[in-house]
Amino acid sequence: MKKNRLLGIIFFLALLAAWGFFYSRSGNASIELFPKRTFEIFPLNDSAVGGFSTSEVQAADTLLTASVTLRSGKAFTYAGVGFNLKSMNNRPVEPLDLTQFDSMEVHVASKRMNSVKLRVLTDDPVYSRNGDYPTLRVLEKSVPSAAYLLMGGSKERFAVTKFALNEFKVPEWWLSEQGLEEDDGKKYLDRSVFFEVTSGSSTLRGIPDDIEIRYARFWSNNEKQKEILYVVLGVIVLGFVVYLLTTSVASRRSYAKKLDA
Image (cartoon, rainbow, N blue to C red; front, side, top):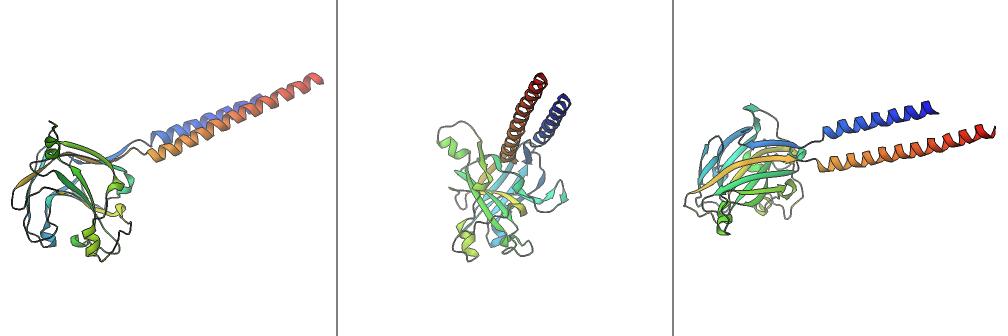
């Protein structure tokens, strides 16, 4: 009985060690866009969709600046800076699978505009045609920039925003261009091609403005995976407690029978 009990304890310790191994591998996942410059950076404007806006990009060690000017000619004008998610560390790669992350963090400032738009463009297997830029599915999220904070009395130059990736939404103008009456709920974040920071609200046409980026990253703390691991740990501990109680009762009965004999 003692031998079996010892084997049970060893088995429990082995399960505990395996749990610890998997838990250690469930740490935070993160990929930094800037200032690490993981992906190719390029000036972004609406010329690909028939617009006339302009953007000039300057990248220093700790600051990325897009000097933009919006021009008339399109209903939805934009300009800013883009990150080519198919060019990692100066090498061509497959579209980035953003489903491995659940959150985003950006530190942005602006000269005049109150907010900037963050956009993820994905390769939609239905509507995108051979990676042609105007046909990529657009996901947008508006975040405040420094001008908004300054108006609110804050002395902080950069607006720091953290949000869940599921807050990216398909804009109505994109749905309209595809002939869709409502959002079909699809995002294809596993086929992400570009990430963009573009002009937001209060951007005046014909008036130069600046978008500054100090930090940007996709990240995940793997909370769901950790929750599952905690449940597994609870099952292991509960199973071990039940095993100890069962073997203890069996041991007492065996001892009692020896006394009766």
